[in-house]
Length: 199
Image 1 (tube, rainbow, N blue to C red):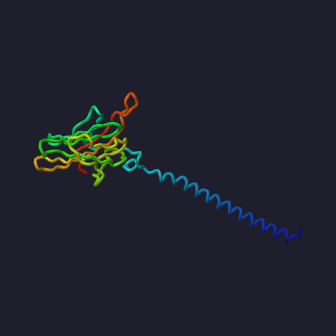
Image 2: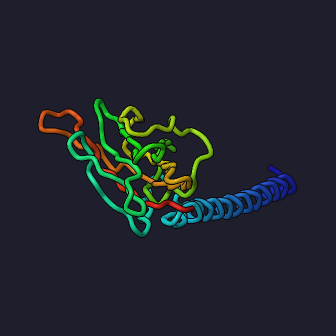
Image 3: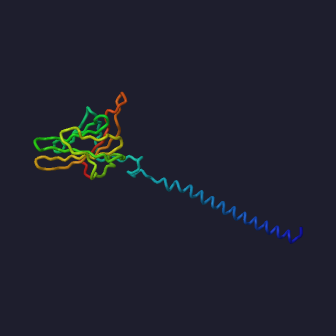
């Protein structure tokens, strides 16, 4: 091999070697950049979501005046206003919330209806009164019912008519869990409620 051929080969190898070094440096720089992105990405996505009431994993604090109760066929309870009964709430078979509006004397009565607003994160998540979806208002009868669903929120509407005055009172209610009997059947529900509900 002649000297000029040897120089040309050396030049080619030297240029190739420099290209390899540059490419290796670019690869290492790209890898470091990609690694930095992969490390930072989970940190930016993992922001604190503990105060977001729409996050299904978060429970929402109960509002002031919350009452916790167990309802069943044997234990119904009454809502009142100004020492007058508005209506009663109970659990009925197979797994329903039953509601009965009160009847006073003559035309004085309280119509009761209920609306299931769907799954919520707790009683505090019920913040508005629905504009539709309420059951047919009834009074003095237990045939007004809706499915009792764990984790669902409800708004109860009492339309109180007494001595020519009309007063609407709302209750917000949340089904915490179903109560299971010793035989394994559903026999009631643990609920939380608060009223008067005035959003």
